Image (cartoon, rainbow, N blue to C red; front, side, top):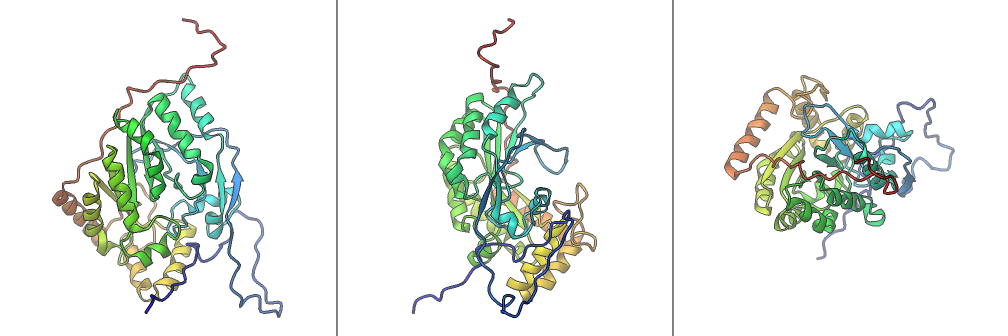
Length: 356
């Protein structure tokens, strides 16, 4: 008999919570025509030009291994329901729910802005993380090519680069990444969450399938590009049983480093993820939420540095110990330190003669 067809929502979030900064609110109203009972119309993706005048974002967080990042896109079509970047869409007057996945702001001038930033006299070279807030290789990148244009700048000026993605599209740029990696200027982290295909499709509806991400790791490794397996997010009682298996598959695929982060549910994400759990995994929802609170001192989320990424308490300590033991057994090493001494700053206006 043929396999039964499964119906999956094309989006990760199940609703569109209000923008917390909006001055007005709306609510559904039954006009007698059964509108509230009908299935909602599919939400198409809308591309919105971003007129940002700068491209580099800086942070002082001790929890992340970089201080500078670039996000070619705001909003992400991958639709990961747990994405910590969802609340940032409120700053753009959008909902962090379905609108985060369907209203994508793109930065067509990103490469030009990057060159201008590097040309400033006070610029100091240090590795830049690409796509940390939203994926630089989300589906719309196939059409717009903004990430590719940025990588060409990194190659031209020999600037160190870090990438994190859950998309196989990164393979398109193997030529540029291999060029950088040959000089110790690039590494790529591939995010993996679960091996369970149905769960992955519901958690991350438009990201690459689990086995495809391991294929991407293997191709990056074969091209000489250092690969880090990012086990993220680790969701208590839902994906944490797969921790060691995910690490083993990543090692077999060529990853030489591994990191993990615990599920983070700041602001609207708590409601969105709770709604998702009760809809897709109702029998596990209570246990998942209780264990998550156990990792954050009785709250769903603790935003303090040193706590937000790995949590605290008995369960968090257990996750940390399991990760450490698996990393030692599999021979994982710390990610390589990228070079900054090869950087060649852009020259100024060629029409302007140099003083020296």
